[in-house]
Amino acid sequence: MALNRRKFLKKSAVTGAGVALAGAAAAPAAEAATPGHGHGHGHGHRPQRYSLTVMGTTDLHGHVFNWDYFKDAEYTDGAGNAQGLARISTLVNQVREEKGRRNTLLLDAGDTIQGTPLSYYYAKVDPITAKGGPVHPMAQAMNAIGYDAVALGNHEFNYGIETLRKFEQQCRFPLLGANALDAKTQRPAFTPYVMKTFHVPGAAPVKVAVLGLTNPGIAIWDKAYVQGKLTFPGLEEQAAKWVPKLRSMGADVVIVSAHSGTSGQSSYGDQLPYVEDAAANVARLVPGIDAILVGHAHLEIPELKVVNEKSGKTVVLSEPLCFAERLTLFDIELVFSRGRWEVESVAASLRNSNSVPDDPKITRLLKAEHKKVVQYVNQVVGQATQTLTTVDARYKDAPIIDLITKVQEDVVKAALAGTQYAALPVIAQASPFSRTSQISAGDVTIRDLSSLYVYDNTLVAKLMTGAQVREYLEYSAGYYVQTAAGAPVDVEKLTNAGGRPDYNYDYVSGLAYDIDVAQPAGARIRNLTFKGAALDDAQQFVLAVNNYRANGGGAFPHVAAAKELWSESTEIRTRIAEWATAKGVLDPKDFASVDWKLTRDGTPVF
Image 1 (cartoon, rainbow, N blue to C red):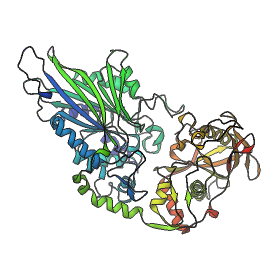
Image 2: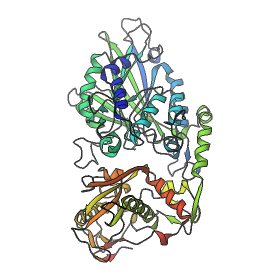
Image 3: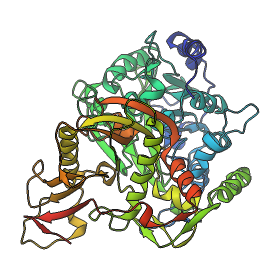
Image 4: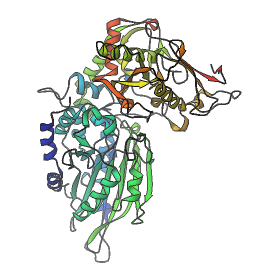
């Protein structure tokens, strides 16, 4: 899927810094705006004021409708949330009505085109890259709603650069990424920023700059697509370069749309010198920013105030909940003093998508696409002999996860047949991604199999030694909270030690082992055997592993640096569907095995 380099570089050069400057400066100006909230002008004693509202979404992940394609029903959760751009459209219309459309901006902080069967379908099944192909539903919806600019997220790169460039062409707004650079020229490969002008009757116009920053982790997570083509330096250093430029170009307000959380933490291990969740650091270290729309972390942060260390000024950050469940509002008050506009105050708040109905305009626009995808995911591909569920897969070896490892083992064995590695034993990793996934006895659909593997990960084969596999398992076992032998076990408190997510806990198939949770992390793997004998540290294995883990996601030891024997671009979930279709019957006897169990001082926990 990656573009040939010449074609790509030509494009990069076109959107390089020089052109982007001119392009952004000439961005369409907003219509004339009225002074905010009825403050008059022309009275010498009363300063002129202007009120601007910047709206923001993030981590939409392909959610156009309040629909769960995996359950084939309206989306619901215990908190009563609603999802989808159709709801956001209604909220945006309300805000524009309240504030005056000419006094508003609408931004997004990235992760737009991956995450639902809807977005997958138009990347892979009926791809937007095909000659005369469709317009991506996310482009259609966001164009119709009238987004002004969208930052690049890391998941934008999951389908390769060609798909991303096609999506970019289809959008009537720029995709911003000041720190997505052309690897050869080190110039921006995407538009770095936009400058919008708001006209105030009887006063100087207000100039608003929006700088887009993305996540350096793209270099790890989508290495196969971006290596040698794009580089992704840190957010702080790029903001420090761009913000003064924007101020010198006359920006009265500087907003950053950052696909990066606020925690200051990273899951890169020692793979990158950057912080993954750097938004608060940017606010603290780079003077001249008024507000930051935060993304990537899938958290809800109505308003976070960070004091800049150099200027002493307060920067306001906000992160709306993912999947179009919330809309952030930055209400910015400006006052005209000493011949220029100054930001007097910024206040952030959230609006909830569950408070409004879908916008019928968006529903009508994408009804046909939605229907097509519903039909696609409901195709029956086989029969299950019994119900398989992930409900206790976090702490018990569940057959449904063994299905994933079995498919991965089979695909890698077939791929390595006839090579010098064909005789090596293949083991596989998989994580309990979902706590609610279920394949019911009876008909099995693409929907059932997709809900089991929710990410668009692909498969990689890595060469590992027994000693490395042991350390890998030991690291994985750090997911459990240390629990003394006599203490009661509450399964809700047993996992996610140190905030580690379920997707960073791995099963490894083909080995047998105990995890002693009474021991401290790092000393938990017991009775580790291969084919009934104690594991030989020098034995070589082929680890079938997803690309996120293979590239260093989750910072598991050894795997990123291990020799890569093979990789492919077909999604693991597609491989699972193919495997199930070929078998026709999903019977645990074909894939299930109890490889591991939790113990305390040698006694099983369950």
